[in-house]
Image 1 (cartoon, rainbow, N blue to C red):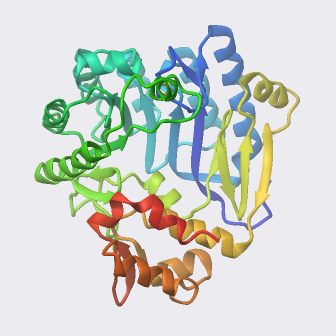
Image 2 (cartoon, rainbow, N blue to C red):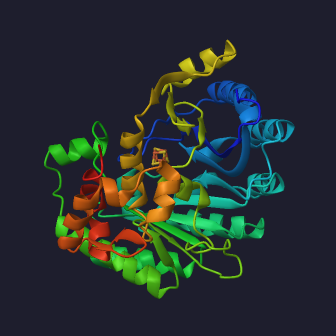
Length: 391
Ligand code: SF4
């Protein structure tokens, strides 16, 4: 619970750990659902919200997963009514991740009525064969249909998630998917390269030699992504994220496009957030927490009235600042030196002078009077660049 007078935490993440079936590449914590377990989870989640509500005044909320849209109307209503009772509604940005196969007009209306104002739709591809290849449960037609359903329900802030460098995906297929996706006129686009996570079916297929990874093609696809998205009017503001910009809607003094995802920007800027639900991580006043990645255990703990935290970690300030530096460099704006000092109490120029010079020397970064940021070439290698900042 909060100390009297402490500023309440403004960002809330909720993990919904259920999916209709597991996609072949996915390492997120989620499991095939059963009605009873979802009901039990919903009750436990409400209990967890009750335990932290006094310390929360959300400006951004993000329900991710898993597949949050898998919850049925009654389950959503239970969660949203509890949030209303606990004064957790009214966030400026309230996002729910949806799978195109689980969007309905009734669900969209319910979410909208309770203040959800942004939907992130996991599309991944608009090629039917690749959707099958990935183990997605939706078809390309469902993407277009669900998008229309969400628009009709009044959502004017929609994100599409795409994936590239999928085994079997040619450059022509990627071009077509991008062309069709940008034609949908969403406000936001996220696109990630396939990652081969340990213990996923896709990883095992790679190890078994069922396909090869083509890094050159992946690089070309990333370049194509940037070109096609920016030509279509999106502004890239992070390695994998693009948003529309309307200067009238932009937060005063913000360098970000108006439709940038404020919730994710808070992560990249090292801000605090509560993470609720199985496997969720949180970061509150310098302490990182991780909930049990086990829905049964999560429910048992909360049924006893306790938070389901598996681990707590308080990072030494310099280590934390290094992580914050690394995260923030994912953004095109990089780190304004003043902002970094406000966020971490450290000065990038004092602690990471030689690292910044090294990256600038490689052509991966630009060091300017007021800030340090990665170049277009450097953003492609941001993970390698970021490692230099970790302490
Ligand atoms: S729908 Fe999302 S969370 Fe669920 S298995 Fe597929 S990628 Fe993972």
